Length: 489
Image 1 (cartoon, rainbow, N blue to C red):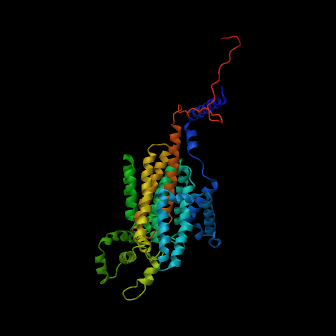
Image 2: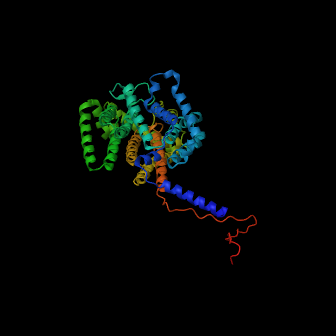
Image 3: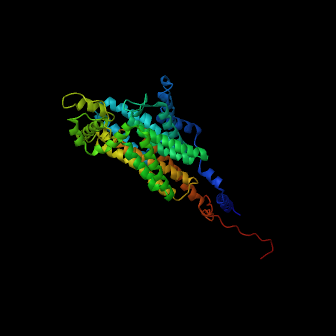
């Protein structure tokens, strides 16, 4: 056999042996181990620590003078740079945030307060983009994302337990923390409900499963109710509606029963002032009557809040229409409204945000900024829809956990978007964690799909036969002629 033919024979046998070994039947455990590489221990530790820092706010309560959050953020910035996760900004979900950040950089020079806008954009980069990228690049398997969900749930409950207190009107708030007013507490507690449900379903021990589910969800619902935040009612309705649509027959019945039990429990437990404030939600649709009533009688705190929010919405719309392209500058809504939009009597308005995330973004970054922000939120939702279809193929051994993760993300996103209509939460960590989980899940499912495609290739697929080698002169070698003993014709 010639050297060229021998080489082709060896290559063909080696390829066949490799294909035969690869297509041998694998046990479920082997397939699961192959499909789920382990996340880096260092990356996972600091990802969970960063999530706990933003949702639990522990170092705003203890060890406040050591600047521990600054140290954590600095290490996380280094991890993001070393891991190369910046490329995730080019993913389908990351593009929305990339466009928004780019537009804020473009609009900052046109801000009425340039240094304030530059500081705001730098804060976005330092805190929220780093949170999103590190949380997105770390998970290598669905269990890693489930751990992050458990930390989100624990952090929110920890924050409520340690810092929760009531204000003069009996509304729950968090003392001494960055996001401590009643609206922020309602966002924190309600947002944690889907993550608590996911954590309970992820646990193996039955006692822990039902303890976390019943105890955690009931406590979070009670905390949300104690805030007396009216936006929580439609937000919870949307969340329950998402669970109802995704649930099966028996699950729908249990969900309805649990909802009825929750309403009865809220009426029985919550104070009368809180229930009256919730009942004033209907006045949002007849503000003209409330305004006329204010001229003759003393309004309640709830109705005064409605009139104040009406004025804030009007100012935000005026701000956006007066600066439709670049806005007044990222992060400058409160200052611009106070200094450039005085009351009719000439007095200065209080430092208050718009209480509508979308109008505030429009006022600060213009109509273009609002459209980009809407695209960012929509990209998270469209990712859940796209990944749910991709997960139907069941290529990943943990496809059931992935389905639960997608349901958790969809319910949490629905709650966040409804709250954003009545609160200012464009610089809260919730949306960035959801975006990161969507990016991570998409990468995991795509890897599983590629692995399934490789595993499904037929063993008969052979490489093309090796071409005979040429001589240096370009002519093909002559075939070997058989040699005969002397004397044969």
